[in-house]
Length: 352
Ligand code: CUA
Image (cartoon, rainbow, N blue to C red; front, side, top):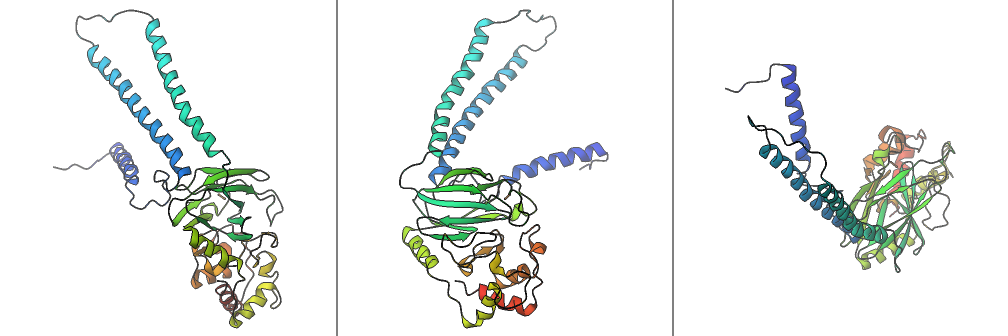
């Protein structure tokens, strides 16, 4: 007959066992878009291969050591009448036990150092891309193409992209220092901190077209979890087309003119116009980035740190009260009326 635990200890053991089982099942997730063990480019594959090598060496060592312990426990266990051997030290054994791990570590150091240097190198022919981390969104600049975008990064496949990771100098609201963020798109590259006032570099490349998800990996405030990244890898031709679309001026319709005027501060009585923080000029010398560059906003799948799907309902909720949907968001609640939100949504959705 099945017996249920009747004491607290019984339940505690049961809970501990279930937790372990639940943890094990986490490894069975069928959809893991941010799994570094499923690399999709050379700069994610190299550390993965290094990890595999280290892991299997560790597995062999584990079984050799544990096997020796079990063997000794069984073979030399207490038996009536048998007295344990009494001795102290064994120089030859100690030399072997020191030399073998040292040799293994020295051997592992070769691929490790090689990988570290490869990942830190500056190969020729890379595409430069500047990443600036803000609370809580990403600014992407393409110096070779003269364009700027936010949160969704587009790259060509088979091309090494060299990310220049810059920490924004100051927080646009408090004027104080920005905080540390960390850029991580696990399937395409390792992770690198973005430190205010410093520049770090990271190599990234995608083998094939697709969308690769990532996020900020350093706790940076209330909406750290909402500071996500989407990398969209295109074939060379598609990428060139995307660049051309981004370089072209955004199309606006007459319907959206009211929203455009509101945005620019030419109409309405907002405490500050949207244009005080957001640029609709995608060139690199566009006004300083306090908020994401919105030039081709409608061509993006997501917004607000790649957190929300870019649709009318989400946009309305966001404009009505940013902090309500993204805690700690720097964008203020402008107290927009329903009509003003109508006009702004109309305008933003024409920014193809
Ligand atoms: Cu930015 Cu966490």
